[in-house]
Length: 214
Ligand SMILES: *Cc1c(COP(=O)(O)O)cnc(C)c1O
Image (cartoon, rainbow, N blue to C red):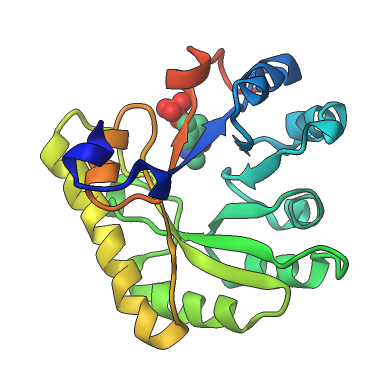
């Protein structure tokens, strides 16, 4: 509905089902309903789920905070990573991505909420990071991701997402086309779609409430 409001073709918006904390059976149930792309944040629970679901032909997106001692699993077992926010992580992913796999699709996570959020690269440091990632082998820079601070204020939601889109647009002359804006979750996905999201990452609205993180 938000797509139609924004005059956008729903086919241009990919739904990433965020399955963190939910078991393999819940993923399989959505797979049978036609959903192929899933997002995960905690590697220790994802690895066994991936093993249980090898035959399900899924596309895995890593969307959680990424420490440098965890990059190898992401480089080997995911098609996408949305949360690259510093050079060291990008360099390790490029080094560890196996040659027999296609390049790892990468979004840079940007802090569009200033003081209110700690994760993500600062907008002022984004051009340098984007330039580096675009130059690394075995990575394909696809776009930007953000998790703005939660707010019921739709105008503020839209301002944050608009900022991310403008940052993406400003990078294109230097790094080439960036086709992905990963923005919008259960509580703000309409605002994100109105501002040009190409991927929305939705957990609770699909799977129900989560119990606390492991
Ligand atoms: C958990 C999570 C989501 C999904 O959040 P919901 O509010 O359940 O839709 C999306 N993106 C990231 C990065 C997450 O960690």
